[in-house]
Image (cartoon, rainbow, N blue to C red; front, top):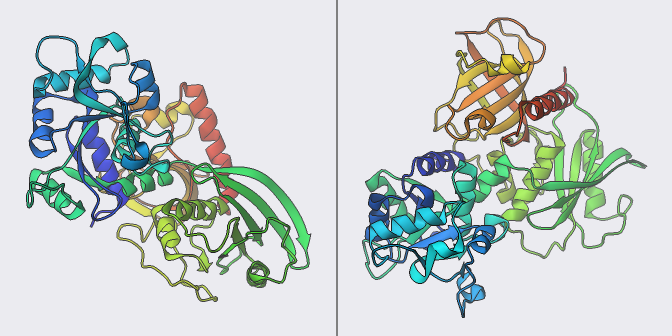
Length: 481
């Protein structure tokens, strides 16, 4: 059983190579679609899309690209009803009617050409551009937004051809998620959902903005108060933390709401009771969501809560009153849930999804390309299978050495986009901070304790070196010596 990481990473590899990918909706009954990167569109790939799709070939595009090519919204378009803002349809100028697979592949490639101009197209035509919402899947869970997000992550031009997948069981209907997965297996295609894209972006990006940090002395002892604002939901959160790591102590994280923004550290209310629990524990955090407890929690809100816990630096906290969906998102973000919670969770406990039980990697240390040595940060490199579900990014953790001892390490997982874009071999690179020995051809066990940031393509080696130095400083602050 695959997890979101595995499904998205396979899709990224397939799209980078120009292969079709099947995208399912955000519910089991939602329409499924076939995606093909526009810049790599061929007669064969578009013929496949037309043969199995609805016949309407759309082109998911970023709003800035639509504006650059002079593609206004279609007259009478009603995004409130369809959820997608379609523009005028186009054909590339040239011979042909525009409707053949060859003509439409050519139109798509020109739409994906950054040098194209508005006069490269005639209007109307046989390719229907769709303007992706700013913010991608976090603004709207639609196929256009998921397609643009995927191609942006994959490092190819973000214009993507897509068409609804017709049901083989009922040719008058569009395939749902279950049938789409069957179709993908039958044709050897990658398959993922729109929610997978959102989860992956949560795993590899930061979406919390720190608004304030204050230290407060209270009747319950000193608390560090950090305020966050989510750039996904716009919601605000306050994390009240106390204590520090101690032998045998598991941090307790409690979740509460508030609808009154007034100070509440001294209130006799559920938040005060949660603060008492954490204070009695001696180590932990109360996360307060600043909205009404009667408001339904969305998938993006669960992502917010998981990010707050990740920012607290707890790799394996005990949880109280945390919704099951937030717990699941925490596993996706590389956290594990401690079973040592002395306070029973009020909303139940969800089993860890497959592939997220243990944020660790074991493997032989292989010879790399000496990039780390060149930059001044030697690394022990472990090759990763495409199916490995650990999230790409920079982590703080520990490595267990062959003699049984451990070393603190700043760990990078990914394809080294600064040097290789999306074409690099996926590696785990562990920079052991206080170790200078030879680990080649030995087996290393790498424990990933704290996810710190996503992979970034830097404009220069100097910027990369500065970021690596900052990663080392943060690693030391997160991992006790």
